[in-house]
Image 1 (cartoon, rainbow, N blue to C red):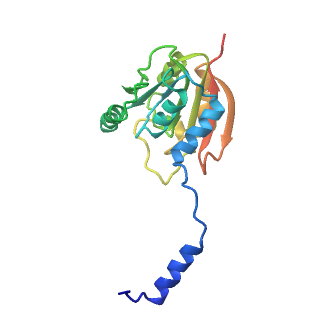
Image 2 (cartoon, helix red, strand yellow):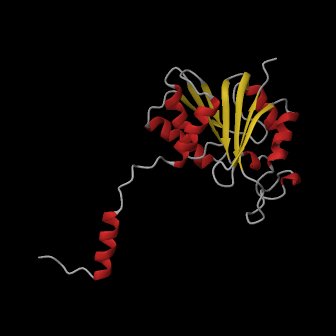
Length: 209
């Protein structure tokens, strides 16, 4: 026996049914990882690191792209997230992923280990950016690429404790970031605005000489 459905509900059902069924959208992290892979030329066998991996979506995506002959380091400062990342590595049998505890003044990555390093909305949290930039420079191989996704300072977000005053709020001006990277010895390759929305993207390189 069919139950009577109110007219408004019937209208809503018919409206939804008339809409085209979309393809399953890629997760936003997968989409950003795909853009990074293209811009940084990730290839099978590469060694990549993500600083401040969070839940690890982009790290695990990168691990698939570099294959079993490549390797991905994922660092995290938060102990809870670190423990979850290690569980995910074990659960997914991700033998080409290594989880490392991050430091406030060091990445704790091996020297000259990486073809590329990236981070998403992490740089503005650094309380010792000069020390971290020096570590990133050491971690990259000659000619290695560094990608940073971040956003301009916002007065609507709570201030990050301990960061330099020149951040101007929660976030970091793009010119401040690129200035610090240049001071650490990096070459700025490109800057893109709107990655996505209000974020910007900075691509830097460790010189080959």
